[in-house]
Image (cartoon, rainbow, N blue to C red):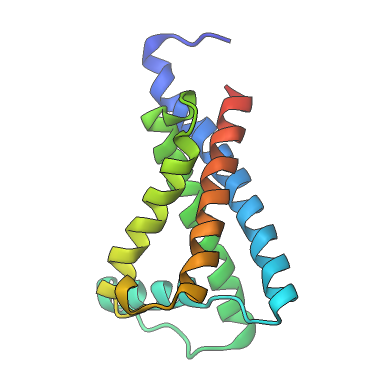
Length: 155
């Protein structure tokens, strides 16, 4: 279906959000399988970001960390972050080029290498061990390629 020029950016954002959700679902499934296979714990960085933004930016006191509440906040932030990046992907229309998903996944991962150390939620990449970096890069490459594939399929 061809949209009028004025509707194309809005449509690209909508399709990007849906594609970002598909990419986030693929990444989440891979993470869950990885954590189960390695008997490791999922990251709680998303809820830490929520807490930092809530207290530092919005000047709101959040309830003390609680298992159930923090799990919901962690998952919500993970999905909001993934779908938001999908909107940007759609807006950039990067899904029309082969290999764009790989580049996109690396951009999302690279961005985390800046903002998470700045928020003191992760060490700088040069202080991380390869065993930590490798799965994280892999998850983001999967996210990027799944988002791009979903975007192409929906366009």
